[in-house]
Every structure is written in structure tokens, then in C-alpha cells.
Image: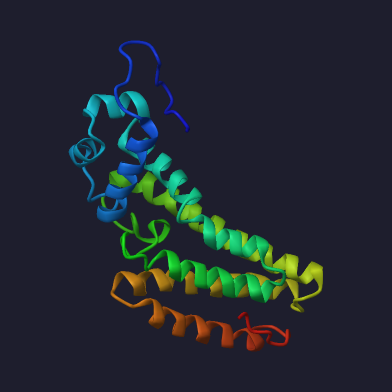
Length: 214
């Protein structure tokens, strides 16, 4: 658990569990987005006073950053794990897309990726939160590119270095598009059809023979 700068253990003992409260805050931000969530919404969902939120987590933006760190270790982890653990670049990209589709179509959570849609546009005063998410999305792009570069190093992907940026950006765009489609009502099966199309493009974009993932 990362505590907000300036928080202190002095004073009256806390009567709530910070980890539980943070998970409740995640649910609110996920359902309503950054700008659609008020401090009162958070206080009601977390079951604590606004003053306790400030004392334990900092400002709304500080809390949101901690929520996104939690999101990254929960719903955000399966796609990254797929990139790390699959033996080839192609298998890694395919598994990443499928894991993404799984995560954004769960019946017990909003159908979109927070990284992509939690704060897409809005008021000037929330620029820092939007840039924070943009940095996380840029990290997603870098992570995908690094996995493709690993495929070149391992010998399972034949592609000139200059093309890796475009290839990484293409599959990052597919990930982001899946989230928008899910938010607009696309089913898991419909997202799988998109993934099939995206992987059919692999041989056109690279010189690697196709080895479909079962």
C-alpha cells in the first residue's frame, strides 16, 4: 500500500481498512470515470469522511493514482502477463489481445479499460489526471514494442527495427479499440472476431509464418 505524501499515523487510530477503502474507490472511478466522480461519491462508497480520505490518500488525484496502481496489479495484469510469458512474439500479442477482451467483458465490472477511458477529455483543471493516464498508455505502447523486440532477439520474429514502432502502435490501437467496442456493447464473441482479424494481419505486417494459438 502506498501512502499519500503528508499522511501521518499520529492522532486517532483509523477505524477503516485502507486497502478495502481503496478497492471501493476503484469501483467508483471505474463506473463513473475521473471527472464524473466527486469526493462525496468516494466518501459514501468508501464509508469514510472526506477528511479521512485526505488524511490517508491525499487529494482526489492522489487517490486516483493509487487506484490506477491497484487496477494495474489486478485487471491490468493478465494482458501484461501474457506478453511476458508466451514463448513467441506472435503468441504473446494474440494472448494479450484475448486477455484484454476477457478483462473488459466481465459481468461484474464496467466494460472498458480504465487506462483508456477513465479520463479521456474534460475540464482544464483535470489535465494532470489525463496526462497521467496518457503516460500509462505510452508505457503500454513501449511494453508491446519491447516484447516485439524480444521476438527479434529470440529469432521468432523477422522484422526491421524501424517497423517495430508501427507494429507496436498498430496492436496498441487494437487494444484501445477493443475497450471502446466493449463499452459500446460488443460481446466477448464479437471482440474475438476483431482479434481474429488483427492476427490475420500479422503475416502481412511481418515475415513470420503464422502459428495460431490454440
